[in-house]
View (cartoon, one colour):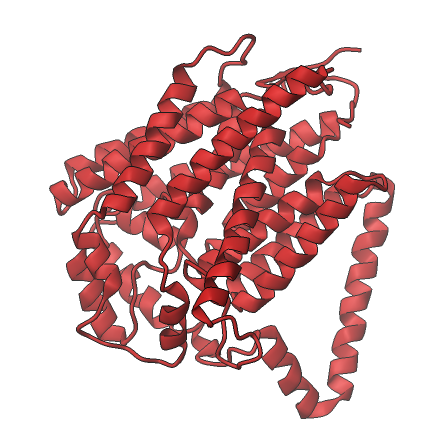
Length: 451
């Protein structure tokens, strides 16, 4: 049987010996430890849960803008985190790996073009010193992406990301218990742990998607573990009350479930889903205004504030689009718009702390212009196309995870900016892209299934 190559060898399941499996498991754990430790140093805040409570109670202080303060200063923790991440990534990139498939194809060249555009943006940035610091971080970030994905297969990358995300969730729970802030019975409560609830929601999404699509299909401990991790991750996602995160996860789960349904049954699944939706709307209409209010409250996860303006995003986006129009093609440089002064000015204008544009697409235009946005979207769509093609050829579940995560980034990007930065969210998406660059789908093969 013919098989086409990926950076892990072939689409066929490799016949690892016990010692080889132990080595691969140890490598995943080591890289996962580096990723987890690095991003913990970079993004964890011990009092994040307390800050979330204050924000939910609408306590805005003009004199205390921590987001602006973080832009002014480089903390020792974040510096060590990025150096650990980038240094380990460079070591992994130059460490020899026998039979490793070289990155290739249009996806690879567009990724190279995007990275080159990011680096070139320092030439026309508003604040060149500020942007230069961000570009150093970007180089360290991409070194880790390219290095780790060279050493690990797509499945190993997916498991590692899911494991890191789940460990962050569990650590966040422990932190909240220690602070006495784990109070899900209170109306204003949002699960945050050590980061903002919207970011915690993405950790829940990564862990849940990995558990759902990488679990075994036959009864056993792998299947049971996957279901436990998925259900707990989804439950904590609901506690974050991240509406954008929930919508993105539901879209990703729906697409992933549709892909894993046999082609003969997909039409029935879609028809059944539409029928269930129609019946639900009819039932809602029969309950009258009280039912509609209850449905609206549930859909907004109990957060009814400024729903019609997307929690204040619409006026913010109008202001940012107006500012982006002054430099539409080149932007203000990578991360160059959100300086401490701009953060304070815009936060004071809208009376809430605003560290980003709350949209990947608006923030990309602000930073890299329309050219940067087009390159970014091209990367995502080419990655999706290659992952879908690989899944059709191999029927391997890790490609479903890749598709679902990239779709998650597209949907989530409409109302949040996490995937445009250099945090764990962007690291996960770019890792999927880097893995896809090493997958060859140019030849026809018979389907093979990974066990």
